[in-house]
Image (cartoon, rainbow over all chains, first blue to last red; front, side, top):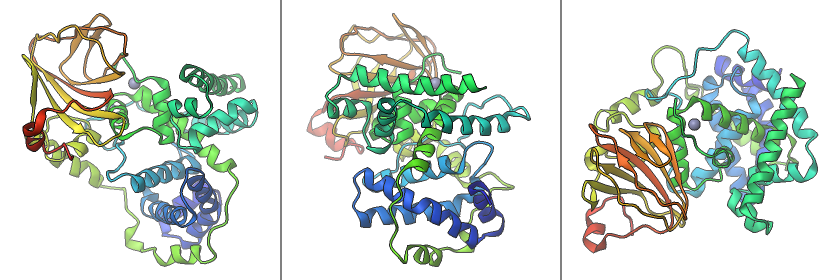
Length: 179
Length: 225
Ligand SMILES: [Zn+2]
């Protein structure tokens, strides 16, 4: 069973076996992620537990055509971590907002294209030069905004912006090359 | 679809979770109007997902899974078929008195438009604080009466303005609902609101909140000092 199918099995059958499978896979990774962002071990375990509980509750909202399991779980953990630090919930757009300006209706092959896109992104990240890869990692895993990375690495903000931009552009170019 | 977008680095920071609340509020509100930037945020979140896959795992406590399984309740699994999701209904209820405003903004405004207390800044220009407890950024609503020009001014820090209703023009062009105007320290501009409808904007400024005196603070329910 893939990770995506496990989430769907929770939505469909309330499968505890599938939940345990997801927990075994994601919990130690999420713990590492939250600790890298500065939480102590106890707090990290709590964020992981809260995140996994949301995975259980929100499984029905997961759409494998829109995002990979890892992407979906990442966004839940990101929000849980922020909500814990701040008094207020993280301001986020609401996909159910009646005001939401819609996208054009999808064509039949778009979900497949998106999945292939994800696979290529994986390859592209693995082959990113170390300097660029470490900046992307910094941006995602060290709770640093572009401005803070600049201070941290003693390089100008403009340079950080352009290097991360370069890394992301390279990722996109690699994707297009593969298509 | 908006013509003026949020800068890419802010979209990356939104996806990674590094944005302070006031900036996150502005980006989230723009995303409500903008499918193009939502698509881009989705791509950056996918990068975050892949980073999560490649991170070195750290073992959980021995009883962690057991503890998690104990907490699972069948009825907690939300169903998403049939009627509109609960958030939509909740939003519609709040929406009634706040006009058509993006959900994340309605969330921050709590009491809706009626509970907003405006402070006059200039003739035809009013401002109301929304988020004032961030160390670096502040978020406020600005309402400019039709046809009114804000006198030529420069900024002490960077300023982001998102048009929510109506529109305005400055040397950079015309900004309508969903458009984001970036103003930096050295840029001097004199925006003029469109005729007809008052222009409502969300303004996020890099720099301390301009306090409006003791009375203003006491009257303003959003200022928690
Ligand atoms: Zn946009």
